[in-house]
Length: 468
Image (tube, rainbow, N blue to C red; front, top):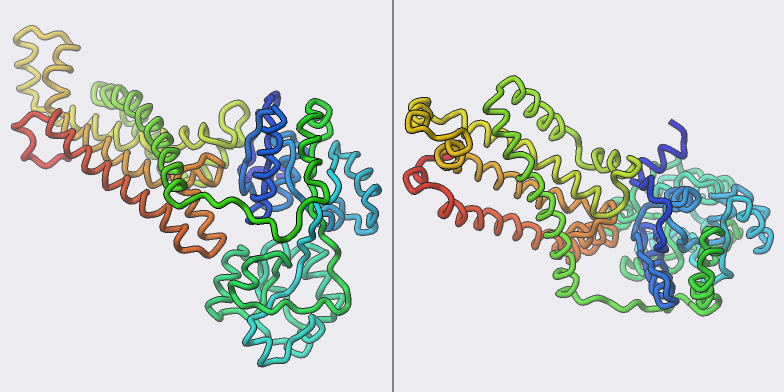
């Protein structure tokens, strides 16, 4: 598998979404990128062009591959990243040269927005004081210093590999980890240093000391927007809106913060939509399949085997497959609903088939004896007798569905997984609970609602018998 296909597949990027008239703005897995992406989205909308913001799609290569493949139209980037990581041409230190090189890929840029977010090394303040660390050169005196870096920083030539050569640092090459986990590790005292952006709020939050780049290794990373040239040609008003931010921003830009109550309400609504649509579709499909499985045991074995096979596929892997299938998935709610639908099939099919096959033959014979048609027998005798088992299967599917729906955040489908993912990346336990508690509450509510529904649909004489 080529590098391009691997990056796109792992990053959950969609195929088959060409032809849309809506501007799609992407952003990376950090707060600054999300903020710039949201600002761009609002400006494009204000210009009269429909726009959507696909937040936190992944790292640099993910966004670049998505842009050049036509899955998004614009996203915020930095000049240093374009030179070193994307074009592999550090000599392009002139903006016009950089723009000319990008044009060969069908990509244009705005001019810088007015601020920089450069790489740096952050060290725990107590460790820096104890060891006398003030500059990056000082790291050479402490080969045993515990350092872990984000995945990109650990691998990129303009980051750790180049920094190590430039300064002659003796530390071994560390494995890359998620940036949020690196901050958690440095907070817990498990590591001493990690990479930071000079605009990171985490520098102050975790009391880090930024080491001086005394040998001037790190290049400048000026913020700007990159966009597809064909998109710009079709949407001149939207492009003009993006350019309104040129030279207008600085590091002190403060976003409007959504209140926790509104955030919970919005994401709960998204979560209910994902779960409700997928569960309804699963009931409409799986109950008839369960009837077929009871009527035709060999066919039933195949149906239950297929549904069981789907259950063994890890949720993330299934999402990867769905979003990369042309004209089927893509980023957003459609892929999430399809995945949740597939995961809901097994308990409903199996419990429906089990409930129907467990009906005593004498009752079926009695129904035949009074002249009931097949449909009348199913509706008036078999479904009521199997109702507890069928309802238990639907309830199981609902609880699984609600829990699995949190993964929708990974593919821009919304839901209560969004604050959970944001909390994990920003070390904010409050945000994690903002998604986890309502999700658990929805699962408990589903249990209670199905208990009440059982009092309505299950015949009184069957309520005391445990459902299989």
